[in-house]
Image (spheres, rainbow, N blue to C red):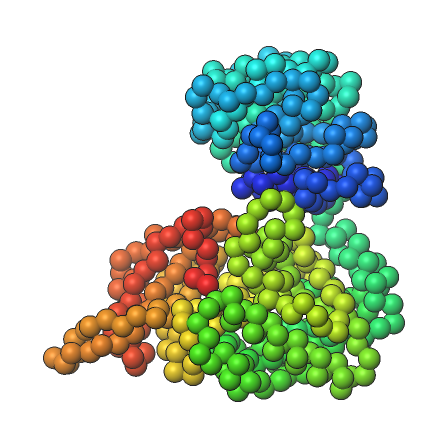
Length: 510
């Protein structure tokens, strides 16, 4: 199975390229723009895609690949900044454009026999650039243009190098998927042979080779990611897998007991339940920094896993349900992007611990994990549950985590979810949750002045968690939620609704 290698030059759309390629049935991996040539050869990709990026190729500190990449004989597609890199390295000329081209543009096709095969003569594309090609490299031909870009698509079919100035990976480009399919199948000769079934087979084989006869300990969080990771590992090594489900005091109302029963009876997992609420709350006492919270929680989890490993004897491997958005937000290992926040199972782990990691879902997006869960026999009801952060309610309390604050946010969250289900919009949402804010407000209850806490409620829609839009809930639903929280949760006298999309905000507040 040949893969597509995506080199990340810092574009906000890099992950979208990977998703679109996978949707076409080709496995894709994102790697840093400066990946060594020897590693590219070892990965043996069938195609390479250069992402876009925010910089100009002629700037001294702009990201560039090893120039020898153009001599590997592997088909290359450059997108936006990627197109300009091709031109810059192969003898063309890139300059600052008189006017930025941002947003919708009409693409006029000059040649539809290659990359643009089957496209309409005039089609809508999405532009986002401030530079443009003033001269194309020798051996290339211009196959499309826009009003502002005389070379909106260039091709060198002899060398199998192609470039587009626009973004075929975004929905705004009407025939973008067709362009990517042309590159992958018609020009690079790849096959649509990657799906969830083949992914499971590959991962089972990979895990068996990695683990051998050793034991694996897996921390279950109660969410779909860690469950799916454990089911794949169980498929690979059977009873060598030992799961641990920790009640850290940061779970939703009634969740610990219900899930422990499901893990054991429905999925036949070997699960040890650990009551550890006191130790987590003691360590979190007085801590308000979200990064510190995540790191403390990650550290305590590791300590618990190490203790359980000692009881089991020699355990070399720790399994986690890390997924790709966790990696992207926690660390900039792929390209020149910024760390947004640490996830307790990525950036929140201590630098030194006694395990080797097994992370079978590390390169998957959330919707792919859900598709994988279906393949593994997990019920749709469980699959469609909203994501819940590994650090739990600790990151839904802006400020110190205390028993009292946990009581408030847990009760408010339970009311919110109950009303969302009653309104029959639960499955329309990516997430719905309550956040306790570190402010108090004046109110009036029973003719008496109150000075109590504020709860924010958050309802968002998304397909993969990388971007999200706030949900336009009806005034009636918001009124019911607000009234119930204020009336039923002691200590709260005000409810506010978060109408921030991602970006610029993240879905969780911390």
